[in-house]
Image (cartoon, rainbow, N blue to C red; front, side):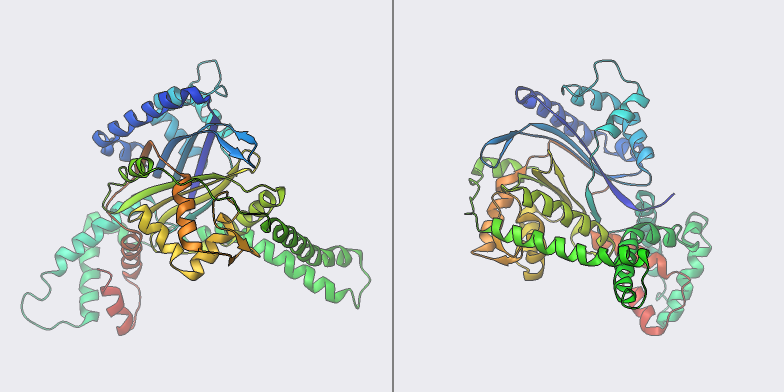
Length: 439
């Protein structure tokens, strides 16, 4: 068991003439969600977000038609098998009705177990990011309630007019929490902390160890004549040479004239913005074919693998979850984010920051309609306005979107966790003052 956040992406092809019908189904489910939000939350206990949409056919390299698709993308905590069973159990009829419109759906009737197998078979890998790592859906509710009860208790601490030191306030809060049976869980150590970190970091550690072993072997080969050292010694130089060669090929590809995407119509922009009605959290899905050239597909695939290795260290204050993936033999880039604020402001968070714009260029510069680069990160022209045009041109309407909660921003969630972690923890006076500010 762990509380690592993960992303599931399930996709099947769809005949274009069925897109309108499937869109209608998903919009009806979205209306039902407004009525049955609580039932969704109690039934999808490990699910943070769920995006379900259709994708029209797109054109790759100005000639190859990429098929229309149905996409189901979820953000969850726990094991994938438990999450799939959760989806199949609660959304079984809806899943069958929507995916049943695809030629890839089995003709025979599927029971719950068969539906789980189908979803698993049609799932594809993705690079996933979470802004509030290791916090489960249960933790979100409990830590919110914990702070609310402590806040209410804290209002009476200065009632007698006596000045109370921060340390005394902390001790009183801890005593209060220990004496409340419904808050007994808060005094316990947060589970899976070390195992979660190990699970997320071991791929990066393994990669680093292999590179380090190769470097050491390279040096030892000067003194020892061992076959194993010679084999290891080749790994790091080959990796550097291959990446350097790919960079050169990419630079040649970057010289191909950049073709801008046609701008999205005002009507389509209004349709997208009309769904961003939540005061705190909203969703964005951007799907674009890649620029022509096999080097784009290869380089993006390697980039996403490397991004996945360092995901543990990433933090974007406004992003709850995000994912990047390739599909249709690497010819399409899919990006989905659940974030605080509206999509226009969210996109500007990256465009208006030089460092973030460079980071995003590593991925989005490969997508058709996004600004051209030199050596992957150096901008060639009016980067900001063209980046925004690329986002809008390829932003899709998400017909069905579910969020476990709509009230707490990423910073709220992290502050709630910080408050819980500080209970019964030894701190100096400065740390206590900082901790009390999380209330």
